[in-house]
Structures are given as structure tokens and as C-alpha cells.
Length: 186
Image (cartoon, rainbow, N blue to C red; front, side):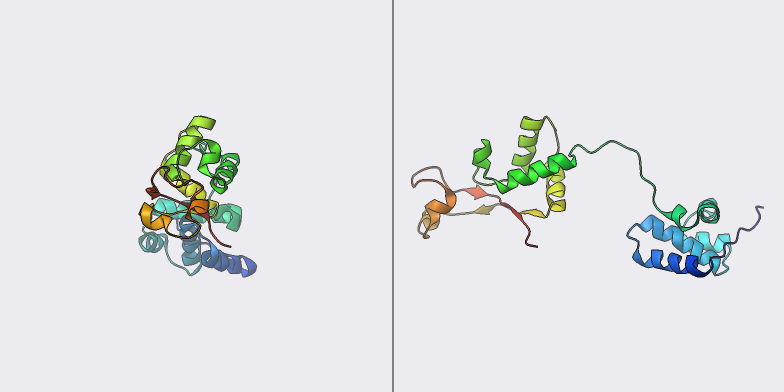
């Protein structure tokens, strides 16, 4: 049987652990801090493992890491993996595109859709992403894409300023289905 491993936090370190537990957004970091706080209260490794639903080996690893690296050792480290397809530069480009009319960029649609933006990225920048990927990046940029709305052309044309709003002359293509991407108000 392995020897017991107890951790005692003192003064500022204990305050910092409590603050980390309250403020962290990362669930794994919160779980690690909880392990340390439970050990500080005098709980055994078996009790901590049952409470946190982790193995005893995992609890030992994080208690040891806390002993050697302190609070900083509990934070989530950067993960390796495939680099993102949409870089910050492409995000800014997406935002610029959304603020312009699709027709300015050669897209024959009355409004932007996430599918249309994904196709434009593929055609112009040779970057293939899904509609959902585009939606997530736009969300991060405070741009909301709404579901398409259907308009009845003859009723829409009766509204004052319809031709100016839509940018087309009477008798041209149908109003049809449109989807809009707009920036969220601050």
C-alpha cells in the first residue's frame, strides 16, 4: 500500500485556491483545486477519489503537482492538436464580408448565409470549413446569423421603400428566402 499524501495550504495560498475554485471557468482546473481543498481538510486519498469520481492515482498526481508547482501547476496546459482552419485573419475577413452585401463580392444571394460564407472561403481562400464552423466564428465576432425568413413578394413590394431596401428594380427576381447575418448590438 502506498503511503498517504497530505497537502496543507497556508495563508495566501489557501485564499488563492478558494478564489480559483470560485472563478475558474475550466471544469478540470476546478476539479483539481477541489482535490487540493479536500486534502487540506484532512480527507484521505480514497475519500477524495470517491468524492471527485477520479482514480486514486489521479488524485495522487495532482496532490504531488500542487506540492511541487503550487497553484500554477493546477491550471490547464495548452493542448497540442490540429491547428484551426479559420485563423484570426480569416475571422476578420469573415466580419468584413458580413458587413458588405453578398452581391459586392459576386455572390448572387440577397443576404449572407453561413453556407454562402463557407463556399466563399473555399473559393477565395482555399479553406474548406463547415457551415457550423463559420457560425461559431461569427458568434465569437458578435455576428448573429438568423434563420431564413420567407417574404411574399407582392405584399413586400407594397411597403414603402422596398425597392431601395432590397436594391433591385420591380419585376426582377423573386423576394424568396433570405437569411441575414448582423452584428450584435453592444
